[in-house]
Length: 178
Image (cartoon, rainbow, N blue to C red):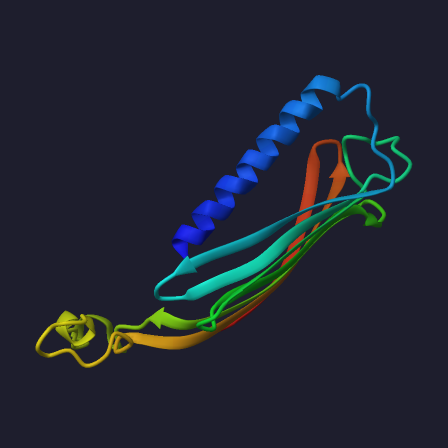
């Protein structure tokens, strides 16, 4: 999974670099209006997680173009899953215009993981024998011996506003479920 994330980050950073270079070249010539989006597919393989497939997309609304390069609404969606039941499902939203005078940031994530590390309860006093999880050792039990299924859900809502001048306020609410 780490390898696929590195590849995904590398591809995304290359795309951003190319887009930034193009934007610098003719940023004054093009004023974006309305809705625009960019999407990127994602595939990879990891022996522990299996074949990974998915996509991500970012959608912008620039309105009539009068505030370009700022945006009115930003939505980011990422979905990826593996054949061995791990994945990431995420929705992110950001806008200063949904509620006038208040910047709203929403983030919803669901991360199922079939082989999360688990070394036992009770911390230091837990029995840990690395041989039980290593293939080919004489005391080998299972490579999943120190693993567990974990489903993580996160929902956050953040609000920011200005009181006066450079004095601002912010508030947020977060719900996490393990």
